[in-house]
Amino acid sequence: MSRYVITASPHIRNKVNTVFLMNTVSISLLPAAMGGIFIFGWKNTLPVILVSIVSAILSEGLLQKMLKMPLTWFDGSAALTGFLLALTCPPGIPIWLPVVGTIFAIFSKQVFGGLGQNPFNPALIGRAFMVLSFPVYMTSWMKPFSMVTSSTPLALYAENGGMKSVLAFFQGNVPAMYKSMFLGIRGGSIGEVFIPGLLLGLVVLLLTKTIKWQIPVSYLGTVFLLSWLFGMDPVFSILSGGVMFGAFFMATDYVTSPMLPKNQLIYGFGCGLLNVLIRVFANMPEGTTFAILLMNVVTPILDRKIKKPVGYIVDGAK
Picture 1: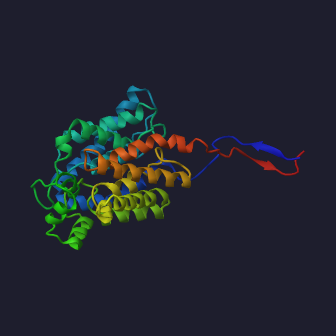
Picture 2 (picture 1 turned 180 degrees about the vertical axis):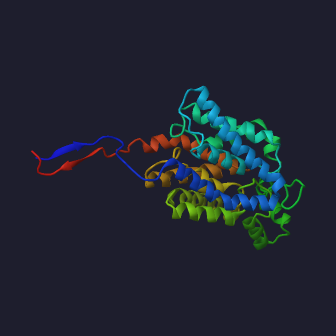
Picture 3 (picture 1 turned 90 degrees about the vertical axis):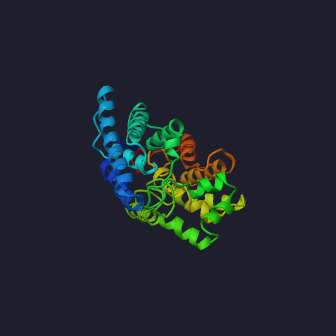
């Protein structure tokens, strides 16, 4: 007869802790951040990043004190939220705006019980609040290496008749368009434009096993395929907007994404599907933020059937 031995929790142990994970993701963001700082100038980017990080840390500490929760404001999670939020902002925005955004982002996490309890990605909640409350500031883009405002390629596509207007902006040269978009010579958020930096960050996350490949691959693959089916340039769709930033750093958030690989594939597919549908049918050129937030709602459903191991069987026991 076999005996089933029940062990004390926690049942799954790993040497990796919150501080390591948060700091690893923050380090992986540095290449994209440095690319944005170089392209748009440090005066238009660095203050936004620093103020956002400091504001997030202070907001978490104050809210935890007010709610009488354990203080975890230096575990790296608040700093990462501020960093992520800053990189989704246009360069040159008023310095008070990331403060407002980070306060709302941290509140959206703490009100549910803190890290690990939040159903939505805090940085994306903060950005969604900023976009809906201050749309003019959040859609005013800067021309690279200049103080002049400029439309993003995705805005040109949505507002001026599709790829013809985008190609006209690049003098009809498709390879030149791809090159400019890949290197970040275009308008956009601070952290989304420099694609080599994003790819380097992805390599760091994969090599350190901080994330798995399922969500980024299924997300980008879905965007590529559906863009082609809808008659859009699939390469343009991948390189434009915040798709790659969202697929690598936002959709892969531990708390708000599924645990099992097969569910992560479904989750990534859903993010990509919603992203394309919002771009094609909604009255907004970008859809990454709201696509991921909507799929955050689906995560508990995908994870519902997971059965965690709580013990082991001893053969031959009486």
